[in-house]
Length: 248
Image (cartoon, rainbow, N blue to C red; front, side, top):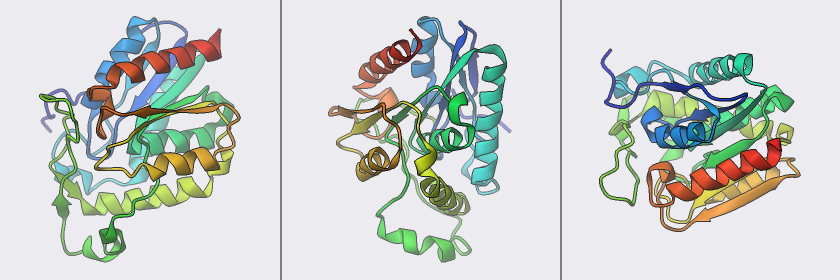
């Protein structure tokens, strides 16, 4: 199946500290490559997997479920663990949800989390229709390229596959149920002007994790896909400082 340009997974060899970076719902590794490159230039081993059903055509995504996406994340994490002494997990949007789920499941194997506009729920009114309408309508209009900076493209679908969206709701439920298991250091980046994920998601996460080491950075000049937006440099620099502080 042909890939969207730039949607291929990437791996960069580096030192004994690894970082797994997970893209968002309907997105692709393209949204995380700049972040991965910045980390690799600082000497870290990085991996950006392409989640099943992503980066090709939206119909493919309706044939996948959250367990497929999570399995790919866990596989990429295990690959990093084989070559690195320490592994951090970074994620954006649904990638943040999957990173959080991995932290719940793998405990101290995850050295820390850095999450950009992570998603755990939505307040959209149509969320109540999703369990039923997914059997009738295959997709809604998309949520891609919510980026303030001109000329950027995250390599995402122009439609929301509804079977996959329903599965995402199930991922949210199970991750919220076990959120108290998260004790790792956590750094959250939250855009004040996000047209995809409500900022309340970040506040909820900060209130419910059991991490002693937790901090939040507000991004005032970016929309949802902040890794490609005006505040990308802030994300790159602060996440590097986060790793250095925890590994010195």
